[in-house]
Length: 265
Image 1 (tube, helix red, strand yellow):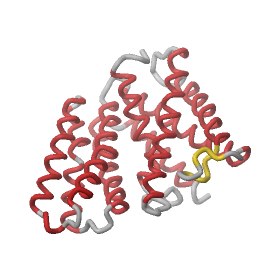
Image 2 (cartoon, rainbow, N blue to C red; image 1 turned 120 degrees about the horizontal axis):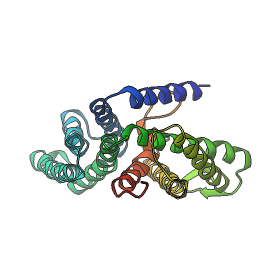
Image 3 (cartoon, helix red, strand yellow; image 1 turned 30 degrees about the vertical axis):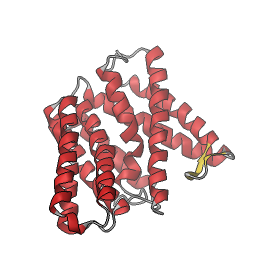
Image 4 (tube, rainbow, N blue to C red; image 1 turned 90 degrees about the vertical axis):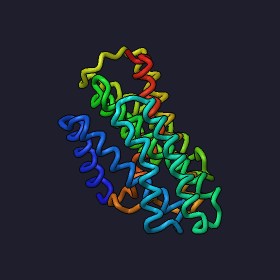
């Protein structure tokens, strides 16, 4: 129950935001989520980074997702370049504060791309035609995949998927997540104003679910590297923000390019 109630509340809030929120509000929420995700990431990977330097690092790392307000991927890419330059300027200003400058540079730049630039794609997706519907479809298939993987894996899972990275994930769970997530995507599509052909939706949903699983495993690998169970504790029973959006960070940009290139139309 400690997981169910917060999960239902988060789902209801997300649906309400996407159903009635403006594009500007949705994009603002993405910036706030990115800020929380970056804070968790840097606390996990750079626990020595504190105070004004931590705040400044987060602000610089937020530039790509902030650039998504301009509504084009070119601005996000420009934001990535600006973040890199800004990170170097921080190093030049506070050089003596770092034991290893390269460790700081590489960690901050990866965090910037991993959290801020990837979330920027979801922010951009909210601004396209039927953007809210695309995001609802993405949330539905990732949530369906996570739920299916959990219950199928718990019931039938024996052979581990990648035990050194995530000991609880099983091959049966992955298959269950793929099947149930795809089924949920088809059901949700019927309720949304999206003109999609089933012959395109099914393979696209399967790809997005697999990519989302890779995103989940990627965060697990990062946490295991730093001997951390959850990225944070802010979401009761669900860990931190990164624990909730790890699948979306990878699957979201892929869906954005599917839509941008007209592969689902």
